[in-house]
Length: 97
Image (cartoon, rainbow, N blue to C red):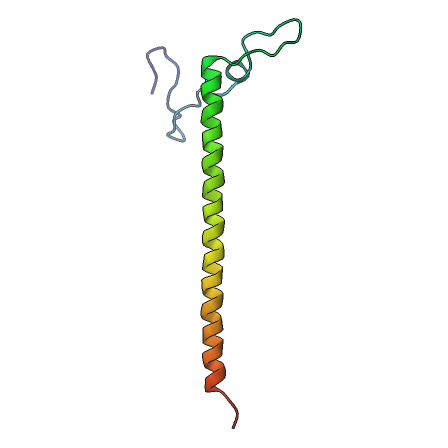
């Protein structure tokens, strides 16, 4: 398929949209200008918004990975307890006389 401008929007082989070149590039991540005396350039409006979005995503990643670690540890603990109970029952049933 082609857009109004004639550029391909959909990749025919993969049936996916083409990568947007304006989403991530040096033009979007670097400042528009620099000071000659070396002062720090302030963030642009969209650049500041993008930084805040990335911080929120990073917080979510940390929270979700902590939850995953907790769930894995809990599952391992439950399995170990079940195995311990099973071994205890087998040990009580198979006592020598």
